[in-house]
Image (tube, rainbow, N blue to C red):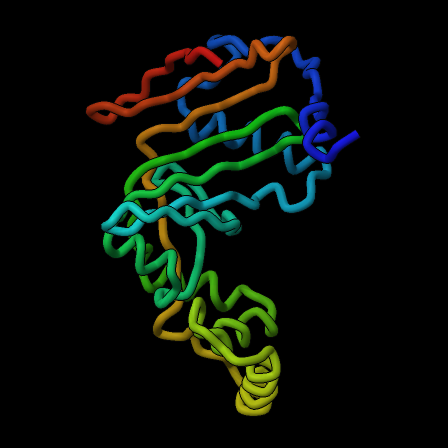
Length: 215
């Protein structure tokens, strides 16, 4: 059997009960909380991992995995270096989408909307809660820049470890959070015979409405 044939034969049927509109909370953030807790309690590794898609002014698209660190009615927050590729793309085109691929549960959630920086106070509050090594890492990495070897990172880490030994590590000026302010949230659930359920919330004049999409 060729590799191509083997890939063609990769398939899984889903056995979840159909998802209907009455199953969902009218508030998509509350509905996300329900599904997120299901994912967390299921034992999925890093249920807060999400694929973040951004594009620059020319339409060049990039994707990477980041971690959701907070969410509420204002939006969904992740942290990064403000000099990173994703941050530069957001600066030129402040719209993004994230996808939570909870494959083991036959579910996924897509969230899209405007992106804004969170306040310096919010970024600081999260930064000081991070483990020592993670705080050092924010100083070590000039994210997305070209480096000649891993040894450079390790040497810088050891230097900063000595520098901050026994003291507080300040938040780097160029590090902080972004919030995706949702305008569209889609809940997808796998169905038998590929009759998947897609229920999407869209916001207009501050009001969320729910629509069903063909799978």
